[in-house]
Amino acid sequence: MKKAIVVIAVLAIAIIAGLYGLNHYRKIQKQQLEQTSHLLASCVNQGLLSLFRLQANDWHKNPGFVLQQQRSLNESVEGLPEKILEGKSFKKWEYAVDICNKLTRNSNLQHITIFRPLADLASFEMSDAATFKSRKSLRKRKKTIGALRESAQAADRYLKDLRSDISTQMKVYRFSDEEKEFIQKQINTEVLDYYQKGDFSLNNANVYLERLSTFYKLMAENPKAYTVRSGSLYFYDRSLRSKIDILNRAILQGESEFFSNYTQILVSKQIRASGF
Image (cartoon, rainbow, N blue to C red; front, top):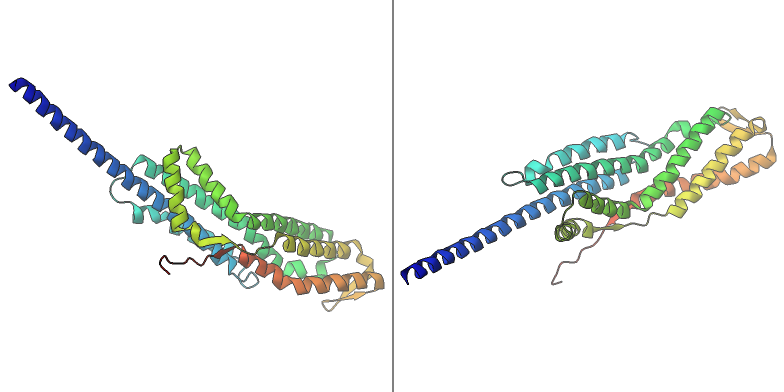
């Protein structure tokens, strides 16, 4: 009888210890997942803050801002793990650091794709009338306009690509479905719920670029129809002058609208506080 009591007592102690150990393990797992989620949310947030700074830039005055922001974003992200990690590192944390670095690299590449062509377009070289007859300059202008078409497409799908990138990275590192759901929810709650796609118009961007492309092509293909006097164009061919006048007027009127289009890639949402 006494032996039975001892066995039962030992089993009870073992069960209690097991339950305690299991609860402790689950608590640690939850804390680690929360830290992992917070790191990734903070990483995504830094990328979006960088985008907003780029959106607000004046490309005529500060054409090198893309590279400045690239360095700034890298520095901000490098400091996140040390700020967020509590205790010792763990495997999923290391995965999250890797994912954060990849998300940041992809954000920088996306920002270069979108904004560097704007700096090229804003340069004096693009509008220098003295080079309108040059085939070499036409090729360079065509390259810039081609880059701007890619830029506009990337700007139009920015948020969609970001969400896809986050999802892909979590699949690569084999987070469980439950972990992925928790992390995505945290990223949404901490960051993405505060932003939405803006009024960027891919169609308006392409219309402007088509006009610009036609203008440069006409100037390069009709070198004998005009001359440049003191930086101004003088046309011998009236028909060409009429076409150029119409195009140039539309281009000049649409320039500020084209650049301001890029200030609306993403916009901040107005989040209503609960209870109001």
